[in-house]
Length: 372
Ligand SMILES: Nc1ncnc2c1ncn2[C@@H]1O[C@H](COP(=O)(O)OP(=O)(O)O)[C@@H](O)[C@H]1O
Ligand SMILES: N[C@@H](CCC(=O)OP(=O)(O)O)C(=O)O
Image 1 (tube, rainbow, N blue to C red):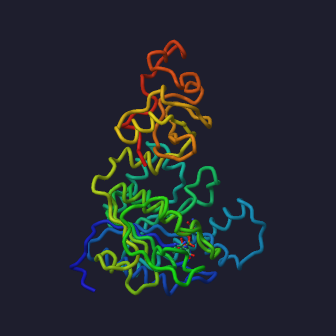
Image 2 (cartoon, protein in one colour):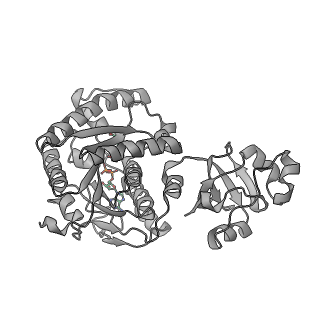
Image 3 (cartoon, rainbow, N blue to C red):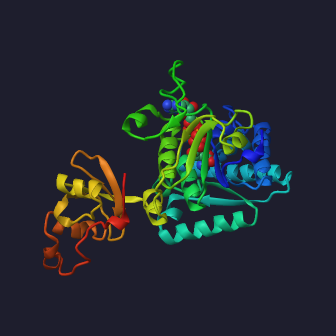
């Protein structure tokens, strides 16, 4: 391959457990050597690489000799705590062959939810890159509980790509890309080489993980691809076992499934609303408000609110839905759920008389909203 064809300057490479174990129950060290070589070669050629690696729980099971344990959160945390240190040790040793240092960033959803913590994580990631160090990211499974987790490394890697302003996200897995059906169940499934629109019909094609190794399957990869391309990042889903896959994808080879970045990416704050912040509640809108928000670029006023679900505070992120539950936007709410119940369906002029105070006429401002 000719590295003079390099098309990207900053790349996030996400390696699923399925790739790291080659479908077995332990880390496939020989394959890790191969993957590290490809990433080191790109670094040498001036491409900045961020590695988002799964495999902590698999490595923990291997290191402890596959103990038979009750399936509790504490046991998963224990396996991740043991396995993460083995995983980072393996990567650190492999990159040291190329005189490359690594820096470990263990994140949870909670670290990215709060805008200030999000910006701190961004500074740390950028500082590693600025010093030629490979950031190695995983979810902090040893302390994370379901409530505070991102939950899967596909979405975590998309958030990492946004954090460091990458121009390419490569999701490597055990399939050649996204197929029109799960190839494990359907031998006639066809590879989709180019995705232009991510819509409900495409989402229906992407199933979960059935191997028992991975988390989320293709459906979380599609979520990740959607978030990344909205932020201006190209995405490729490909097989982690394709020869020289990382280098070839960085040189724009036609491998796997390609998602081209949208031409008008979301600004940084809206990227955070889309992928960083956690949804605390739901605001249900009438048809007039849905049209105003989705087609006319308007802010949401209380008069268009029909109902509210969940307990949220002023400043929390909410989903905006229709009465059937279809989510069409996400945004930061300027009123708490309690206040919104009192002003729902009312004219903005009456907010002060209803509440005794007023945070402005708007419930979700269009600058704080991402239409999906
Ligand atoms: N439409 C699809 N195309 C390809 N793979 C699919 C599809 N739907 C579901 N899958 C499943 O997604 C799996 C890959 O995801 P996952 O198991 O989470 O692996 P990883 O550890 O790489 O994240 C594949 O093994 C496959 O069974
Ligand atoms: N954080 C977990 C992996 C979670 C995950 O998304 O796994 P995968 O679907 O294999 O990328 C671990 O290190 O075991």
